[in-house]
Image (tube, rainbow, N blue to C red):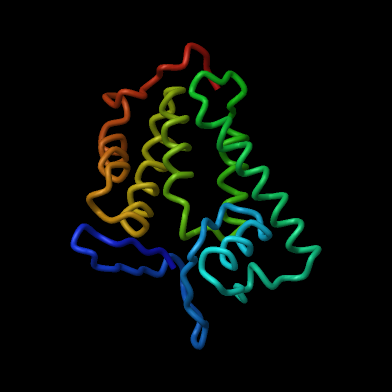
Length: 174
C-alpha cells in the first residue's frame, strides 16, 4: 500500500499490487528502506509499539538477507545519485531496480524509477528514459499525489526526453 496526505489533509491510500482475497492490508509507519533493527527501534521509541508485519517477523536468516539487500540498495542509490560518477552502467541500474522488487518495495519505488530515468537520459537512451519516467510518474501519483514536483518532472521527461535538461549530459556512453 502506498499513501500520502494532500494539502487539505486528506489521506489517500492506494494498492500498488494485486491483493489476494483475505490478505491483510497495511501501511508502513517508518522508512521501509531501513534495516529491520532500525525500523523496529523507531517503532518502539517513537510510536510505542512493536511491529508484527511480515517483514519484521521473518526468520533471522531471511531478515539478515533482506538487511543486506537494503544496504546494497542504499549504496547503489548513492552511486546513481552521483551524476558525476563514471561507474554507472545499465547493469547497475537494472540490478538496483531488481533489488527494490525483490524487497517488495513497490510502495516506495517512484524515486528508484526517477533515478533510472535520469541516468538513462544522461546517457542519451530516450527509450529507457521514457519507460522509467512513465513508471516513476505512475508510482509517484500513488506515493506522493498527482501534484508532486517529481511527478511533474517525470511527465516532462517522458513526453520529450531529448528536450529535458538531463538529455545526453554525460561525456561518455554506456
